[in-house]
Length: 212
Image 1 (cartoon, rainbow, N blue to C red):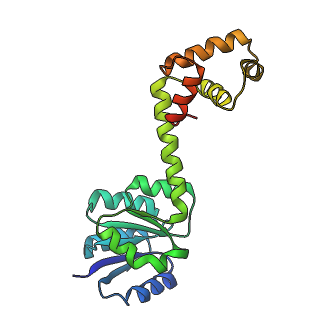
Image 2 (image 1 turned 45 degrees about the vertical axis):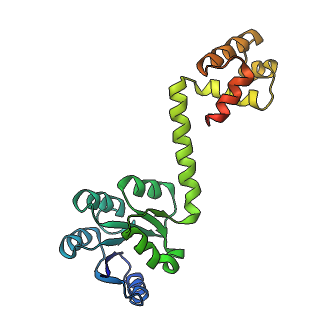
Image 3 (image 1 turned 90 degrees about the vertical axis):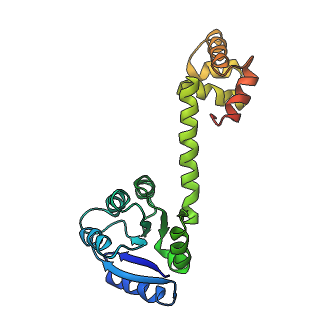
């Protein structure tokens, strides 16, 4: 049985190119095309495709909004965001909306058939050049969660970074316009929050937990 695909993009020439490309694959069938967001939602309801190829910017609601609506009303439909935009707003918006794949048009045509098959199998995909951003976002979120759990302030993290770089109490004091006595007291507080016995151990724990 072929994979039923709906192509939603506001550029007719691009839709024609994708249709021509996918026509070469017997296991993939284009069941409809849509040039704007309202038409996309109507055609998904009408044709019940397995996968929707969805542009980010179309007339009407954005592709992100369409993806969110599809996940709510047609949860079994695979959603591939197929776009020229590689900015974080669209990338993370698509992920949060529940899109199964986010691929860039400049490389997608060579990999599109396999991307469609992968999404149909329930896999999630991102264009290789965007993976680093997603991993960095994940790391930042994980670090912020640990920071909140430990109760460390941004200022205390800066102190730990300086200590990790080999700064002395005198250098840290100069940086924050404190006395060395204050630095020693703050370092002791940091160690207690991290359940460390000394500054060196506190730095090691912070590094291991991805705080610095």
